[in-house]
Length: 537
Ligand SMILES: Nc1ncnc2c1ncn2[C@@H]1O[C@H](COP(=O)(O)OP(=O)(O)OP(=O)(O)O)[C@@H](O)[C@H]1O
Image 1 (cartoon, helix red, strand yellow):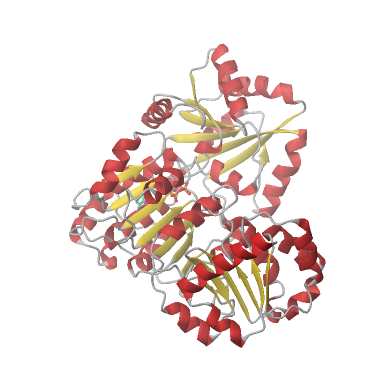
Image 2: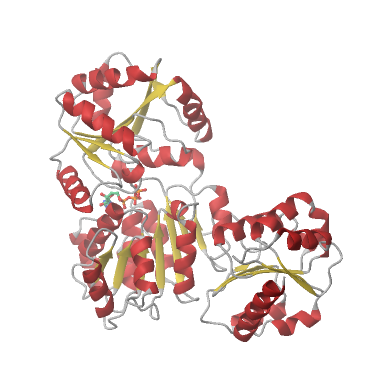
């Protein structure tokens, strides 16, 4: 107990030193929760529970999990709380607490959440607002529900690239890259990036989101300042590499150096590059955190953080990484989130760090499936029949290139072996393969040298292979968002494509859910494959 208090006092000292925070304590009756990774004994937790109601000017250390339990069991006591402070904690647990507390928001005068240099607050008073505004070097995260709703709020659009008043060398790069007119998302979302606004932008798969943030980012960079000014984050290495190629292509006439900072490559080389200073870094989270934490990468001049596949990057598994990155970038950094899917809870979550005035461009879920893609299902009576049906399909369909999605690495390996044994020329890719091998597979597939690629969801998002016309879900994705992404590997930029779902009995519900949720039609596969081939040509 003694020890816990000591630690608490030390923590508060650090916090108060940094934020002059305790001054405000006098003006409120406070229930302060200091959430830490310190193990708290059950006696203390029991005491905290006893004192849950009626605490005045007292400080308790409880674990985040306890708050969650406490809130579940005893929500009435919430009205007693004027301020809740969470210091320093695991973001995922904290966000869970935030979610629960938000339900009772009207009883709270303040909610503040602190990660070392990462703050969340809502319903803050003028006094607090001005206080935080002084702290320019921290990412300010004010959640004012009244001004931050979930609706689309950005309708300005341009008809041509010229209207965006881009630098002439950037414009030249765009045209040489083959873009003549901006796509719908480019018409809308490049502008707010250039204006320095935070952006949350959604658009269907294959409609040019990469071009959107690439053009926006390149325009924001000052080539004369050889410092890292923009970070583009992507969840997987292959996607980061692809974005890097687009940045290089569109930025070919600019005096801007780009670098792809991803795992599986030489750490030494990455360190040297980062130390030298490059204008724009396209990265996966692990390697980026490594470079920033170990001070190889200077964050001082960063002004834009683009997050591709943002819903995935903010979801479990990646969210701690993202929080860690937020802690290390300047507090006033511009953030641009992009994805084809933004589940409601992710939009909610993003409100906690996107600034007021964020430009939001959204797509109704009913409009997410692409018109150019015909979707079929084949009902499989027994799981072991799947493979035979697949072989028949490949024997009878003429397809230029296709991708076969499985839910696990093991299924990818098994399927690859079985198809190879049947005489098909197949490639495979998943995260447990060596980076060199992954790169080679990708290169060959993009060149069109490999016709069938068996993959996990590693290839499910973002990957752009124009001649890919057929997606087969050998196993139906567990998440409905993932269905949209997988199927979107075909039918890029208005092309035609086909998605075939091989659905065993236990997967039928998932398919029905997708149909209903996206209000889309997945037809039974016709006996006459000519009808399918028509869609592929
Ligand atoms: N303005 C344009 N004119 C012509 N082609 C374009 C234009 N914008 C993008 N494209 C092409 O469209 C294809 C798909 O673009 P991109 O990969 O950016 O889509 P995306 O929206 O990021 O897709 P996903 O949701 O799968 O990540 C690419 O091959 C790209 O070169």
